[in-house]
Amino acid sequence: MNLALIACIAVFILIFILRMPIALGMISAAAAYFLIKGGDLSLVSNQIMNTYYTNYVIIAVPLFIFTANVMNTGKVTDMIYSFAHAFCGRMRGALGHVNVLGSLIFAGMTGSAIADAAGLGKIEIEAMTDAGYEPAFACSLTASSATLGPTFPPSIPLVIYAMLSGTSVGALFLGGMVPAIILAIILMCYVGFIAKKRNYPRGEKIRLKSFLITTLKSLPALLTPVILLLGIYTGVMTPTEAGAVAGFYAILISVFAYRALGLKSLWKIIVDSVRDIGATSIMIGAASIISYIVAREQITSSLGTWLIGISENKYSFLFLTNLFILILGMFIDTSTIQLVFVPILIPVAKTMGIDLIHFGVMVTFNMMVGLCTPPFGMLLFITSGISGTPLKDIIREISPQIIVMILVLFIITCFPDTVLFLPKAIGLL
Image (cartoon, rainbow, N blue to C red; front, side, top):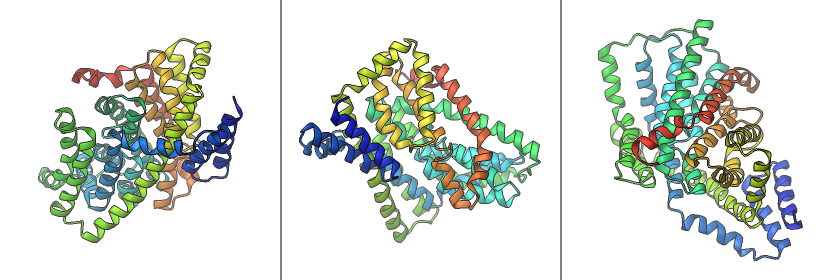
């Protein structure tokens, strides 16, 4: 390690310890590297701008962020919840099942765990608490079910991974379907077990006529994932174009179908979206500079040589990767993990003959576990904030659910066909 690289790492660690924005840390670290190396600082800004000008896929990220904000404001989340509630009917612990099913449906529209927890999650937590569920259980289930968003298509983290790895967005989207459904099923089994143990109430009996009326009202919202996925996999539109269609369609149904979106609300959505997109864009641009430094210093090849020296078995590498990301997820934001550390691991995975679609879904799912793990799991803070539930109570309740998620992660890791089955069946691999 030369002095420039040591300075780069030291500045980044210092920024992290001081709890300053990670994007600022990456840009400062890159600046320190080039100052000591004697390079041109304009390379930093050029690299950041090239990330946006030369990558069409990345445009999908702001489009899906905008879509999520429209749906959370335009009554779409209410319709999703109403349908899921009617669908679950008289099941024991019905509102817990509604929580998971609603998140799975919402996942097919926005691909954001944060949007799910902050929007649909608020409705779910209030309903469960009013029905007699422990607030901590309601919050923990909302956090764990929100992780379905970035796994089930469309998915913002999978779009970013496609940009980093050069893999097909469509194949990644299909690859995430089966793992998300497996997690949803296992979470619902867990809810059933807890509901019986704690004697949680059954849901209201829904007559067929009422169910059909609710479904009809919810149909415009429920058609969103159908339109998106059919459009992508029939070749009518790219994932980026699907993001634009999703945003436009969300506005249409919010204005005309549900009459819940006015000009004032739309302006607020645009302002909020610009703020969210700005924060994400700075992160992505700053990470591109770190990737440039990593490539220039040949860190990836050194890491690959070291890992192969430990074991040439690809499953050993996958196990170490999972362990590494799980530990990072306890202390670092998932965007930092994806933009700083994953690009270092991708070439090593490719060298070991690991399918990058399988690797991408596995890593993304692992990062979603990090959103739920203490002490810095973002979803824990969000659910605690919107409900007023003490964080320590949520952590206690979510611990078994984290074990459930790690079990699904183990299945994804050891059985690649859980990820690759659908892309192969469609002919994308």
